[in-house]
Image (tube, rainbow, N blue to C red):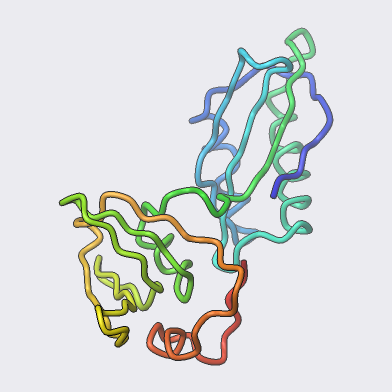
Length: 183
C-alpha cells in the first residue's frame, strides 16, 4: 500500500532529518516511522517513508500521513532545489519481522522462520513477550503444539500470504480466537 503526493520542490534532507521531523507527529497520530529512504539518483528524486501502526495502515491513514509528511517537509523547502516525489507506504507483507513489536503485530499470521542454525519453520505466530515468540507448529503426525523461540535465535522471519481460511485450532492456540486476521 502506498500513497504518493505529487512532485514537491525542496532540498533533499537526509533520512535522519526526515525521521526526526516526522516521528513526533506520526506518534501523536498513532503511527511509527519504520524507515526512510532518500534516493537522489532516482528520476525524479524520491523520499520514501515507511510507516506502521498497531492496527496496520489503511488507505485513509496513508493519505493522512502523506499530507502530514508533506506539510512537515514543506518546512525544509528551498525553492531553488530540485523537485522530489514523496511516498508514504506501509511495511508491506514481504518485509522481515525484525523488532519484537513486528512479531506482536503478526500474531495469528502464518510465518516462515529461518533460525540461526539454518533450519526453517513454517508456523502460526502466537504470543510474543520478553524476547520470546511462541509458534504454533505441527509435528510429524500433524499434532499442533507450541514451540517457543528466542527472537535472538531467529535469522529471518516473514509473514506468509494465505489464500485459505486459517485452521481455527491454530488460531485458538495462537491466542486470537474471536479476532480477525487481516491480510
